Image 1: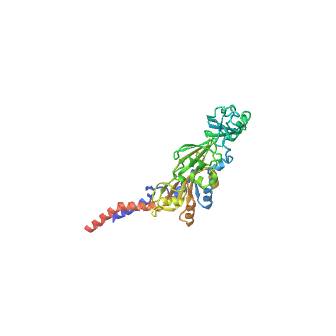
Image 2: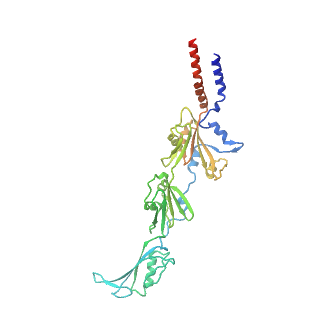
Image 3: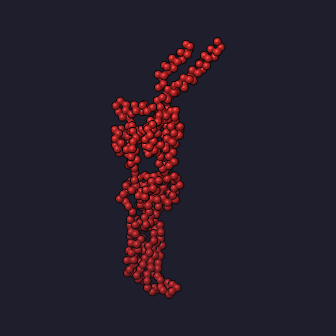
Length: 385
């Protein structure tokens, strides 16, 4: 009896030391205490409601259409230095008339023509044309060059007509590159190409759209959007301009789950969008024995415009973002509706707190492990007696 009493006394004393047992993470009350230390905000706890969900879903994001709103459709492509030009010249009249050699076609009509071999536009922006000198072609369209050469030949040829063809363009092109697409320099046509047009011309991409990001660099400005959004939102599929650089990269979208869930791991989205409810489900759901349904948290650094819209005290980090801890209570029925709407973002951390009673359960389990052999020994001794 004395031994049994000592064991129970030890158990009662041990209850005071439950807080010293190992834990998978802080409880809800621990998190609330740590939010403010020494009067300073370490992070901001935001109770998720419909207004908060609306603010998070309306967070500002990069837009190609907004960043390059004044661009629109580029002007018609012009000839540039380094382009290759072919010029064909025709004139009317009898054979031998004018400056061109003539031949007779099958109908007996005289035809006179000359084809100037391909020329690369020189650094001065000009090419050489027989009997026309060196007309300047850089910065002009093929039609404008054609009209200029016809005027230069008007005094030496009979009603000259000229056809100008750009056989190789190096100036009016867009560069497409990245680790998930065949690099290429795509020439622009008079019709005008959009981003998806040049990506398709470069061979397209075979990675999931939600993990593929398109970066457009133009005039010192670079903006990145997801391929999923580029396809879904027609206004983001803007016209490309000469010398634009389009880079396609694959960035796997992941989030981390800790705490009282079936799995603690880094998980992939595997979809365009993932909500908090879906994130918890991907981690195997809450553990009945350990989890505190009222303590579901999501850690995220928010930009200042979002933090201001949430009304949290400013506590920015070095990069100007504020640490925010979103709290959802899944003990309340509306908590599931909110979790089903709240969007998870890349690199978010989801944490499900342990129930406070879990520490007591751990202690009782430990106590049973220690005392069970003793009680068994007592029973054996009493049986022998």
